[in-house]
Image (cartoon, rainbow, N blue to C red; front, side, top):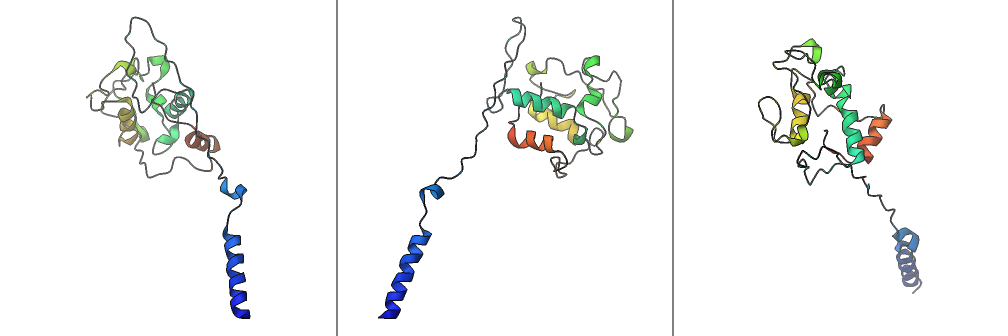
Amino acid sequence: MKPLYSFALFCCLLAFSCSSTDDEDKQEEIPVPQPTPYTLSFSERFQPPTIPADNPLTEEGVLLGRRLFYEKKLSGDNTISCGSCHQQKLAFTDGKALSTGINGQSTNRSSMSLVNLAWNKTFNWAGEANSLEAQARIPIENPWKCTRTWTKPFVNSKTPERTQIFLKKPLAPVL
């Protein structure tokens, strides 16, 4: 009888030790980012641009887009950014007949101006991209421009500010 009593006591203790307390039931809630909407201002003479419903403009996204536009680590050798060929002082072009890409290579086209793109339906000289989101990848992956491969990590421990932006901020289109 004593072994049966010991076994029953063991089972009761095991059952009580496996039950959770109220504190354990409360899981730590992961905060959901609450992005700040960004209001685009433009002349009354223009129709409002079409902003994709799945990628609304936010203050955080616009800041991220601006930082990425000038980020040289998006190029394969960390030497050029979008801003290298699309200079604000030159109407977001580089003023050259043929742009210079990674390793000083001449590209096959001039840098297209980036003015008023929010109203465009197609992008690039050949019109191969049908959204700003799709267009943004083309020069980064182009072998003459940035030659970026997406398998190479961009976010790392040596760039804590960049890591924070990527992990905490929602993305938005670059305008």
